[in-house]
Image (cartoon, rainbow, N blue to C red; front, side):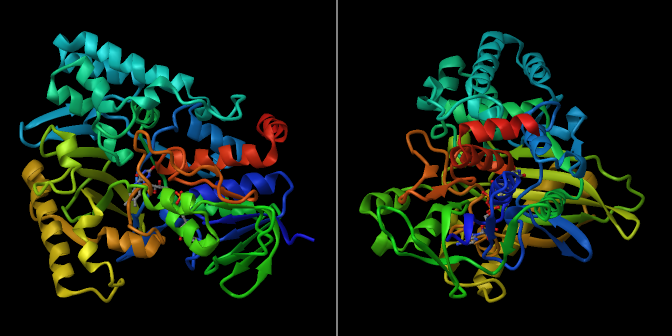
Length: 496
Ligand SMILES: Cc1cc2nc3c(=O)[nH]c(=O)nc-3n(C[C@H](O)[C@H](O)[C@H](O)COP(=O)(O)OP(=O)(O)OC[C@H]3O[C@@H](n4cnc5c(N)ncnc54)[C@H](O)[C@@H]3O)c2cc1C
């Protein structure tokens, strides 16, 4: 007899979503997490009593009826998660440092288009065409409507053309092209490599609305934890599958945990990095084709984060804001690991209540590559070299310098509370390269999703369909549609 119907590996937003949907469908589920706590990239950390976000700062998809709200409503979590929308255009801003120009946007798809037209009145055709193409992709992507009937989304024409190719066909204006690509930091792939379709899927929801969430990712973790208790879902932390055994007829018969416990299950869904999946399967049991596929995947970019407290006296609580500084208007150049100059820097501002006092915070995240930290890959948190500490200090100093150059009012009132490199994210998130979005959404690269290697093992998570919290959550819904069957899934969605 099976111990579980389903094992879900990894308890980030993808694993939590998958485990909850399966649990809500009367299945007996085991959720496994390698770290001491569940939540993955959603988890916040506290320094000097202040909560800081790690892998979830803001998102699209929350405006009425958009996909994130819809998914949360199906999971009955809407009442526990409170978006804080960015309302003022000056809080949704892109600044080109080399030109001293700033572009502000109202939220709403049509509003964004209007704002863009007001900045570039001579580029009416390019702007109308770009927005219509983005909308067209969004509307034709059935996976972005959890209520749509489909089994497997057929790729669109736009899945086979890069963002850069489309933009080059629309205009020669470099600044406009960069603004069209401006949310590339939210999928982690440069314009020449991301398909126009995936760029549009990520960007559309950010045009519609940008929101932070009250209590950040912790609000999600708490809501999921409470909800999971209502169902037959066991959660085990500090636990992972160390090997797959009794493989017969292309099915894993026994899943062996790191504590020696042996389990049987109908399905096992991995919501972890493909290299972690490969480690679990062990190369000796795995086809060369699968190994080659995983080893040839390219990673998305990562971030270097600086966590800053504003120490200015008598300040008002900050509105949530997302302001991106671009040192240049050639994004492909800025995303190139060999590029040596300043890198795109996103400033996420917010205010947190600490002991009845409002503390203003800036989380500054700068684009980063594995190549920046690779030389210290053998070290672990707390045991790094002086050279690494110098690297962190230099990067942090430069970030502060860029912020105060752009916002002189912050001079002498930015207190750096902490900083984190891709190595920090690697070690805390069990993600082999500490990248922001796992495997790159590269045109022509078919990421792992659905059944992989064996009949009863599946891949979902941020590296599968779309990156970010929204994309990772979507992957949970889509994988459950396969596992539960189309009919059961349709009934579940209809009834919730
Ligand atoms: C610095 C940074 C900033 C980001 N900012 C944003 C943002 O503002 N908005 C946004 O939408 N997205 C953002 N992202 C991306 C976003 O965090 C991810 O796309 C999303 O959270 C991924 O969810 P996941 O469940 O697929 O993976 P994860 O959250 O990484 O969860 C995977 C879990 O699996 C566990 N695990 C790993 N290996 C094993 C194993 N063998 N066995 C058991 N457990 C295992 C890990 O410990 C982890 O808990 C950011 C990412 C980073 C790194």
